[in-house]
Length: 343
Ligand code: MN
Image 1 (cartoon, rainbow, N blue to C red):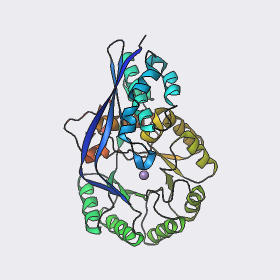
Image 2: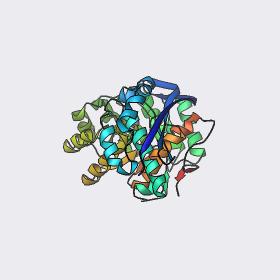
Image 3: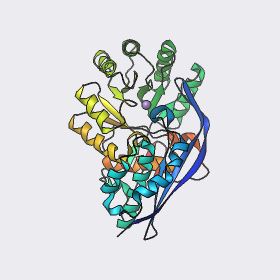
Image 4: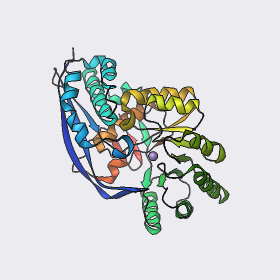
């Protein structure tokens, strides 16, 4: 038996090395919650919740306040029966990042009990992935400097945040494209265009000879018609991020033929729904990206283990830990430039 004897929530504050800015929102620091799950055998499973008010309507205070509730829900459950614990913690619908951290800590403890690594639990498909890095929404000169720096550091997939000013966005993408040849590009509007603006941007890029690999969340999360409009009127694959949090969101968007790709984030879906969304997407020939919120190395580790084990992600946007000032590295993976290695 490997019964859960205690679970602890520890609030941790991290500062961004420089402000992280998307359209209409910027962050200087983040508060994440480290989860420690202790079994009767003295094994500790680790997880992290990185709450996002913008994406999920969660705050760190909300997550922290659920400590005793979660303890009550899962105390004395056996981590070997992890699906039972997933089913119980799936009821944490207002706090998906907490579902993620708790569910991961259960899997981490389960794997330690079994003597396997977490990426092996998820399937052991690959032992290495490659992450992109992100260019914030900033004044033109700074966007270009940031992109060049990323390129010089050896990253070959660049995510460009857009959505505040269409003309400046086109100019920034064109300049970055010209100065960082040979990269793949993800353009992420974080819901901030309307459908016609999004198509207009895509057509201007296309007619300028620019190829982008992914056009992410061009319009509001609830505008499914709009997503489909962009999908069928722009030459680039359209990816849902904010639109897909649960397995039900994924099923609906697939049925509506609104998207080419889904950006799965553990902090939106927990481990349970992330696993379901992978299978739904595969069944529908929808491609996959894995993304992050503001996880530290301990939280990014969750997504690295998941992505390596599943082996189904065409793009990995797992760079938040690289943007944070961390006194101690807590990942179970090796970061070598853009590569993340397990095993
Ligand atoms: Mn996104």
